[in-house]
Length: 370
Image: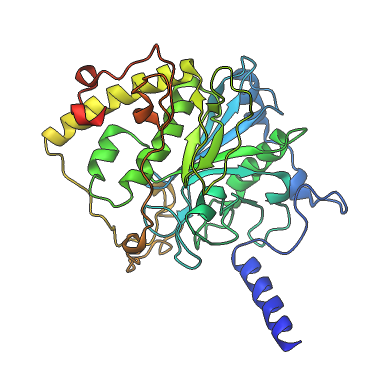
């Protein structure tokens, strides 16, 4: 009995700390929602939606960038493409650049996450909150753990992305409206904008392989303006996978097992590969110019957009950040399937259309990469 009481108290304390009171989610209609959770979008934002031809209830994608301390809301327009609606400066995030690995490491998560109505908390201790869904199947397959990782208000963070109450009110309302008749929306969390310049600066980081894997999904989204389909197999993310031609079986992914044979839509693969080739050429040029490399650990506990530094002095403090990368799990080699002689599968971890070929000369990479 005493053990059960202690365990229950610890659960309640953890929920409060993370800003998720043990209460109903947005998907629970058993009780009336508080006014803050049903608040209409501001008139200016409604006008912006109309101007950009974005239906109020169309899907959204949230994109988070730690180093820039920015959160972007992308929304689907009437043409079916995602366009950026609004960029919000992040008031506070904690930890260092890199993924969340374990409970208590103060790391804000990085990766691709799915938010369902049950993860929307209208009764959060931090005004309103959205649980990003950590750990996802990739995190669990790589034995990463943690709980109650949020996008919330109040500008305080311990592993979360904290906004102001005014900001989270808008973001929550946009998320709520996008879930009307829809099961989920996607959150893409990155260490920084995955440009050649940023990757070159952080080339010494032990997280580089992980970030390059995230970049595949990032490139799919940026080149198509469509939400990438995300699966996990062999402890890796794969994006926009579909069954090979004439396959008699549907694709079944297991996060910890070998990837089944799959291909990527040739049009998506072509656009993403063009971007990757251009980015790798620029990355190689930057390395040749020996651009300065960033320190592996910043020594700064998280960050805050400069917009808020004067408003919230003292909320970003120098602290010794745990060198968590010392126990980063080693990712397995990039899985790829090649039954038709397609070498481009090594670029993406999948088999692409045989009409697309790996041209190392044009890509500006060593022949050994192909």
